[in-house]
Image 1 (cartoon, helix red, strand yellow):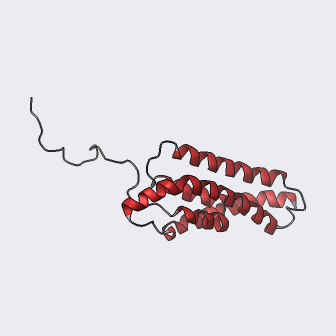
Image 2: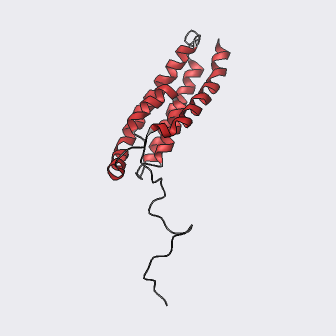
Image 3: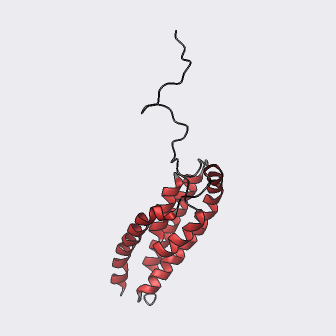
Length: 155
């Protein structure tokens, strides 16, 4: 039986050290800006993009999914049960949804800041949030299109 002294050549089936992204994560403190200006859907998109960039903490994905699900449920509940006078102007609707998204961003910050600091120590810097601006704008537009029927039906 032959023994191999050298590792197998790299290829599509070669084992890898990590299945996650090799780029540095976004700064978790930027979740607030995304939530405030982009909304809950944009927050979810950025958090999921960042999840693959963070170190593999055992229950981080489950916590992230739970926070995003609670944020989405709170936003839908707000749209369904908000009083008529609150839904009369789109400014109030946007403000209410922003408050819900910011609350979700605070929870995500608490869960993501430790793994992000660990990745920062190994990578040296965070990835610029400008690299995700297209996804943030697209998610903001999608949220506006999803919210419009709720607002139009209640006015």
